[in-house]
Length: 292
Image (cartoon, rainbow, N blue to C red; front, side):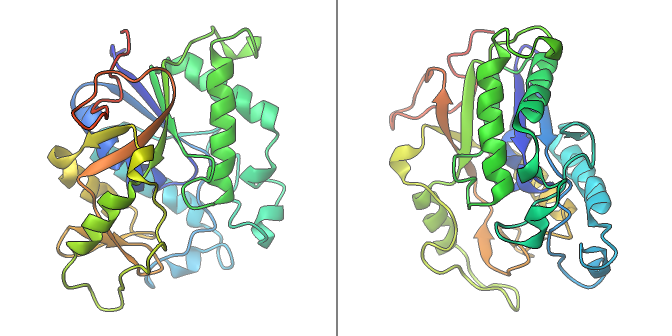
């Protein structure tokens, strides 16, 4: 077991790569133990292109199983090993957006029993003993119910993991730092301004269309320039959900909105103490200040 251990909890396959792929690849390359726990199979995703179009929920409903393969390939590209799924692959279903029929499915992640899934994440934390945990902010980045559910459950699990709660979930382990993954508004704007010609059918986002947070909210910035190829490969592995432009500098989801592949990834520390900071007052290492 490495002296540095990082756990990231994401809602669906591809979420791990979109906002934290570079961070995963960088720490894995540096020898840290990096674990990715995914809560659903992303069955309600919209498929790009025709080849796998009939896998969607309204047709064959085989997309979730297919996305296990995509996630496995993406994590291999990032150097993070095999995927882990909350209480096993397929235990919880992608809830879709709020108010949709998929959100009423008894197996939807939003309908999961909070105590049992909190205990399950506590068990993972006590098993892998991460110094640092990463998940979403209270809005889930862009308001997806599964992201919001993950935020609440992970927050509760991190608080409980170092206590005597859930005695059947293993030996208590105190997580040193909890972060939210976010995108800094100024970095996003700068990335969008650098975009040149777009593939046919793509468009630039309208102001405010992509989620971001003010620069003042960001506590920690991770430079991922050295692992951008790994992140690009991981994005390409999620081919039902993501298209990487020929330039390799931007990507789009099924909505064809161009987004820059940023050279830095952004975080907000919400548990634990900030470590060493740069001239801008920001950490440059998720493990800064952690006693190993």
